[in-house]
Amino acid sequence: MFYRTLIPLFALFMILRMLSNYKRGLRTRKEVAFWLLFWGGFAYLGYHPQLLSQGAQAIGFETGSNALFAFCILVLFYGFGRLMMIVEQLEVKLTDLVRKETLEQLDETHR
Image (tube, rainbow, N blue to C red; front, side, top):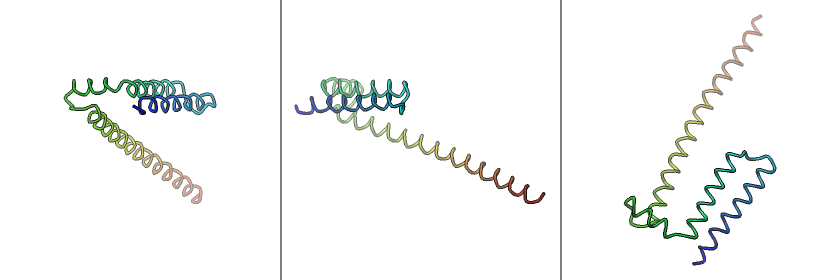
């Protein structure tokens, strides 16, 4: 049961790191609150793994690890989709900016 102490210690390390980043002005309060809840929940489930198994069985998974794996895959696909949308928006903005700059330069040279 080494993981029952390792996971909460890792989560504590990540919480302290997030608080350090907040003090240096690198993170906002919303980000800190989100990560505190995330790592706090992670530490709690690491210390009480039976809760994960009970919750997984309640929604139709055989084991908690299967449910956790499926959840992580869903989150990764969602994150990838969001990143693709952000990249596409940045490409459109960059294209518009380059087009505008080029038209301004052409207008200046034809005066």
